[in-house]
Image (cartoon, rainbow, N blue to C red):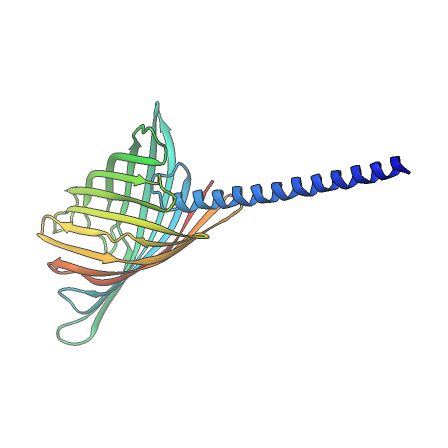
Length: 275
């Protein structure tokens, strides 16, 4: 009888141990999944992430300076691919826009045109940093005219510089700086264009985040510029080996000079990273 009781107590203790171990496994698995989601959210907006990416991004510009009742839509397709050249690590990013421009004519009627914009590509050499979450890249860029009605009809070349600080899971920040100068082409207006795009993402948890990533434009040849500010929201989620990043971000220009500058615009898109 005593042996039977001891066996029963031993079985109960073993069952309790199994339950505890299963509980610990579930908790640790949940923590690991949350950490993986936090890492994915922190790197989802990294333009220098070491993974292939494809972005569909759209700027709807509701008001342009210098034209009557003018609007523009820019639909951008962007592809990024990490490559190794010699012993160096590079990120190659190619961008192609589809542009629609509309405005009213001074003597009545309206004007509208849609076409493929100029093709842009840059290669960023990734500098060796002590912390891989802190990324810095610099390299050449080139813009190739498409020859459409919305093209600049100018070949341009210049430099691109990118910085991304993803060391904090609560927030990430960085910037993209570019400069390019035209050197050939049939376009009447020379291109001497600089851009500065500061960005900041604040994580709210469960893949939700606040964002600001307005692009400041400086036309150095025409002495024209626009500096917008913005605040938007985004959602990052992972399915299989793909990280999806959907966002919407209203942008309002606070300082501008010259014609064809956006007074306000709506920036939205879907970015995909393939792990």
